Image 1 (tube, helix red, strand yellow):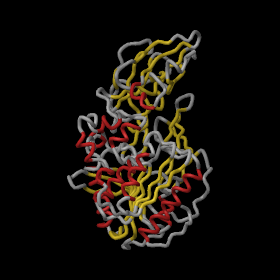
Image 2 (cartoon, rainbow, N blue to C red):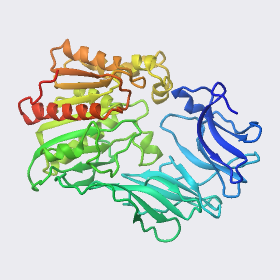
Image 3 (cartoon, rainbow, N blue to C red):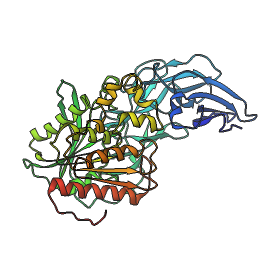
Image 4 (cartoon, helix red, strand yellow):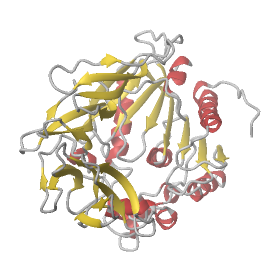
Length: 472
């Protein structure tokens, strides 16, 4: 029997004979300790624990081979940083030295399972704007894509015989459904569920667009057109920035409910641009690490050149622009309004606005020192120069600020600081505090209220419509 006083238990897997369990564990049950995860094996009969992998880097997602003689796991490369660079490893279940398998494109694989013959590991990973699954041979040969480049494969799991994958698939105009496909041979998904109602509303079409940033870096984004859009017509554009910063926008259904409802925006006449700036996942290690000590630098230019691209395409009206984002996306939104006045309105959700005070109050105190290559007292000017609230002089963009009262990842004091800075300058701003909500909202009515408030804010300041709500 394991006690939580000894371990914070993460992912685990049973051996084929049911006599042992391999498990991932952290030293104490706090959010920041995942970065020190190790792997051990416990005997079901007597509870004896035997360490299997114990290193300074985190090891995760252990999975027994079909014959129980080996364990596969994801191991982060040495000199761990939060952007992460990892490979699948294999180690004898009896103990010994692990060996790393071939690197995947993005070097962020998540193990699904072994194949039935024990020769390959099936792993999932995002490739550009599409979540895919790959087969990684245990003999060291290169990883091979199992799913096609345009097929969204998420939440994959294997059946008991390891012959088929079950997964969720969707696309910009297709709601999520469950599918099944063979692991070997032609990957031909068969739809297993029919639970989503037919889409009745016009939601706007979406496409992946590319452009070159100011320093030559290739960047991608997803452009969603207004419903019933007529080519050649300029329309208001809303820019959405993802969190992370290692998040990534993929080909999800645009009608999924969240605080930034893309399909709803499109139905109201907006074009929506979701950019994957440097620092995002899905584009390889170098791209993901390219915003080290440079938040608000190259990533900002990637976002602005993306807006420029939508204007060059004849889609976006340069005089009707809005921007929004949550978490790191909220950071970028707060940063953007300190750098430019081109946006008519902004909405910053759960935003990091003061790097220094954030680091002293967040539940992940290793995060920013890792990204900014040192503690703030050793690199004070860099931390100050990249903090939106410490560069807020002269902000005039009407800014809606939204935050969960119970957020421990980005404490609500971050929003109080930015709101106060804007209010004291006479900038049009509004702060809404949502009770009981953490960093990710869980109550449907709260999510709905955030989305509705965002639409009203952009309708008012980008579209020029009269306020439609009496809420305060």
